[in-house]
Amino acid sequence: MTTSLSNLCLLATAALLVAVTPFAAADDDLLTDAARYAEPIPTTAEEFVVDAYRELPVADGVELASHEIYAPYAWNWRDTLSVFLGYEGSKQPQDFGVNAHFGGRSHINWGMPILADAGLGLQMGTAINATANAVQVNDRLIDNSSRTQSFTTVGLFQRTDGGLVWGLGYDFLYQEYYDNFTLGQYRGRLGWQTSDANEFGIQAAIRDNNDAGQYGATTVLLRPITQGSVYARHTWKNQAAIGCWVGVAEGHSEANVLGDYPPQDECLVFGSDLFVPLGNYVAMFGESNFMTPVDTGAVDAYLGFEFFPWGGARLARHNPFAPVLPVANNTSMTVDLLRR
Image (cartoon, rainbow, N blue to C red; front, side):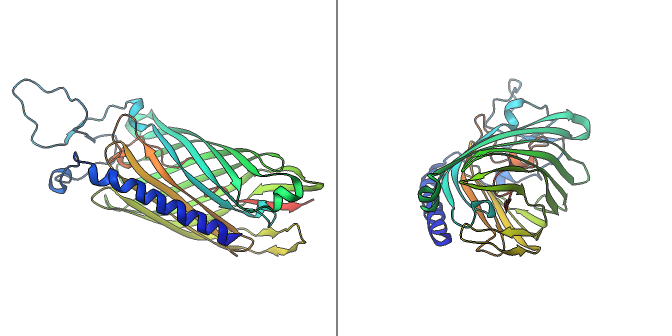
C-alpha cells in the first residue's frame, strides 16, 4: 500500500516537473538578477516593492531608474489572494491500516490588514480535497472507494520591523469518508527572520475537536494528533524558498481492521515545503509531512501550482499582509483512529 502511494506521488511529481519546464523556459519577461536584486527586499508594511508589471502612475518626462522601485505600501485585496490546484496523496492512522488516498486538491488563501501600522493581519482560506482509494480493501469490505475533505483556516498573523513573524489560527475539517466526521485543531507558527534569506522558528498543531463514526459495523473515534516542530526556511535570490522541520508528535493508536497492536508512544515527525515562482503569475508550491513509524504513522504530501491572478508571484512571500500559515491539509492535520 505504501509502495503504491509512493509510486503515484513520484509519478505525479515527475509529471508536474515536465509540465512546468516550458513555462519556466518561455518566460521572456523575467528580469535579470542584477535588475531584480539591486536593492534589498523590505519585509514590513513601511515599505514594499512595487512590481514593474503593474501600471504605475509616472509623471510625463520621468523615467524609472529600474524595473522595481520602493514606495509606501498601500494594501489592495488582490495582492494577497492566491489559488492553488494540484495533486494530493495521504496515508494516516485514520485509514485503519488498510487504505491510502490519491487525487486532487484546490484551495484559496487570502490575507488582509487589521492594524496596518503594526503589521497585524487576518487570514482566511478554504480547500477541497477529492481523492480515490489507492488500494481496494475499503471497496470490498465496506463499499467505500473515495474521500472528500473540506478544510478551512482562519487566523491572525504579524510581521514586525524587527523580523518577528507569527501566525495563529484554527483549522476546521469536514470529511466524507467511510462516515462523516467534523474535526478541529489550533495551529501556530513563531519565527524569526535573521536576514532576507533565512527564517528560523517553531510550529505546532494542538487537537481540539474529536468525532465518532462507523467503519462498517465498528464504532471508531477520530482525533487530530498534537505535534510540534522546529523549522528553518531559506529563500534564494530568484525567490524560490524551501523549508524543513523536525519534531515530536504525541502517541497514536495502531488500530487495524485485522487486529490492533499496542498504542505507539511519542514519535518523530518531519517534513518540508517549497515555493518556486515560475513567472509573475504562477508558482510551484507543495508540502510534505511524515510521522513514524511508517507502517502505522502518516505519509502526506501535495504539490501543484499556486496562481496569483493579478500578478506578484515573485514577491508574494514578502508581502506584509500575505498569510503566514498555509491553508490546512493532511500535511498539517494528522488524524488518529481509536476503536470504541
